[in-house]
Image 1 (tube, rainbow, N blue to C red):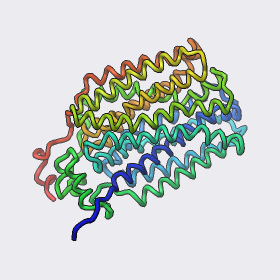
Image 2: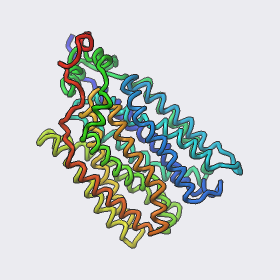
Image 3: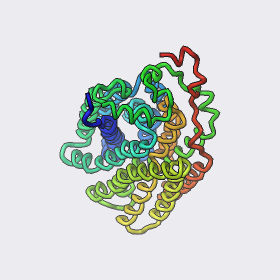
Image 4: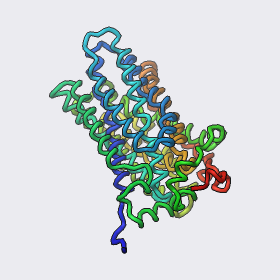
Length: 445
């Protein structure tokens, strides 16, 4: 029987990962918008609020590698579903701490730490999906769309949370975010499968496209499903001895430090430092995240085309280094602008330039690690979250001592360092064993 048309299941699932990415950032950025109200409710200082922000990132960072390893072993479908249900529950608990209770800051820190632990699986598991489902030539676009959810979720957060806060109080915003998360997790569980071979709706032509486009020869074979389950994971000794992994992780540390200034402090910066009112702050706080949402897929498409034209060195590393360097310029200039509204626009340009590089990190880590991409990308993302954890506490400390301009100049300097680290990355260095090195038992069906 002749097949009439090819399916596009892989892109439907990429879109679902975009939605999960948006929900994840809705659940983590909501506290930055409600931060002032939470501090007022519990009598917290900005420093204590910074510790609460950092607690989320501590859990998020520490469980990145664990989440990636789980995705490599158990598959992205179950791991992502469990993660979404977990973080939905702890988002709801964030609103359940009663007013007037002692040690409210400690309780909120504990809840946010566990919320971060649950969210840690989302991007390593997504990268495991990319390694199994997405041909190499499409990975920039796929990762760009997935990470556009970061900007979409974070950009949608200020108006939604502000509206709910004004009409129903800050606690209601956490209940709503929790419900949205649980619903998104249920959709993912019923729609997704770990590999194309397990999904009954994948057509023969789409299956052939996926197999021919994957970098791993064992996934291209007709026994892809069996081999993906039996192939040994990359040993940690090989991962930790890779200069490419360390360079990408170091650059992503710098990236995470800068990105989390926007996620943790930008709204408060506009309201408290630049003097914008609640509604104006909510509007201008959206701009960096809208820029991120637009820049992610754009950067992915440009990266894919340049990779096809001139190779991964230019298409992945070149795009990332240039974009992060450009972000350094925007952020340094934006911190000097006198007008609050113009500064918001310029700084938003910096956020957009930063996110032009996003897909390169994840495409390169998938290429380096192959079937162990969840583990290696989790290790890489752990670096970014340690950067975010540092900025959550260090940014207000620098601002208190030297002013907010100094905080943004430190971020610009780290952007420059992150760009330079891409010069030592070779995206062609694959950590996985070639098929010929597998034992007869490992390579048999």
